[in-house]
Length: 101
Image 1: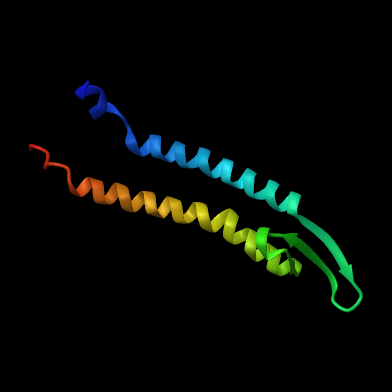
Image 2: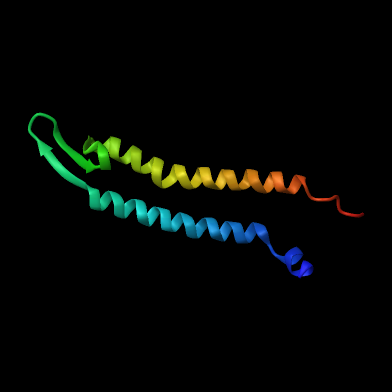
């Protein structure tokens, strides 16, 4: 059993897990905004997007604000998880015993 654990490629496995989780995250986020946001028009403000966000009720966004929020959710969250994974792997490598030369 020990030889199997040593032969596992943790870096490749964690990268694949991150790709799968990111794909699920992006799919969920797009479905959430597609289902909860409606294009609206107001003569005073022009075209905007109204999103229903739980207890906050309807929140109105301009297209730029909605794009920025989607960018944060679709790119920012997976990037932060990836960076956290790199940090965890780096810290875990510090606890390895030194290799015999």
